[in-house]
Amino acid sequence: MALNKRIYLVDDHPLMRKGLAMTLEKELGFEVCGQAENAEEALHEILTLKPDAALFDISLPGMNGIELIKNVLHQLPDLKILVVSRHDEELYAERVLRAGAKGYLMKLEAGETLITALRQILNGGIYLSEKIGAKMIMKMTSGNASKSDNPLDLLSDRELEVFELTGKGLSTKEIGKKLHISVKTVESHRANIKEKLHLETANELMRHAVRWVEESSR
Image (cartoon, rainbow, N blue to C red; front, side, top):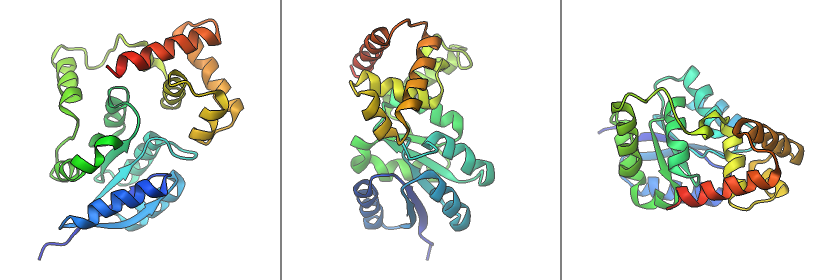
């Protein structure tokens, strides 16, 4: 009898972890071997438990999910990681793949396609939505895989999160609470974003971010 595939869950929302665990436990051949609400706890347990695959969110207290991917794979290079996040796939999918993850799944789609995505990465494949997969293939085949005309690629992973949440109308305080960072740190990220995108004022940053969020959601 084949052994179950052992899956580790990382998400700072208990209800999300519970939902993912229920979906996995109902499926023959999977078992949840551990859970964590932050990256530091997850890193320690994953290195101890050595699961077959892990599901990571991007926004986590302290170290974010992309940093966690890099740190885990540095020590467990064969671990299959699927990112399950509320963040826009178009903005983050390429970043998580560059970090070493094997797939990206929006939380809104998790119930429908989680098992499909997980089986795909466990079998050595990559999981992305058809829309994003097609865009990335076009980029690679056009010879532009290593360069980008998108100025947002200049932003760090955390700056990108701050930019996205700014465009969704969150205040500095609300962003800090959501990302588990201080108001001062959010302000520092916003200053860096303005410099990298050549924006002069906070209002310019807000307009730019709102316009980007609207365009990317079409």
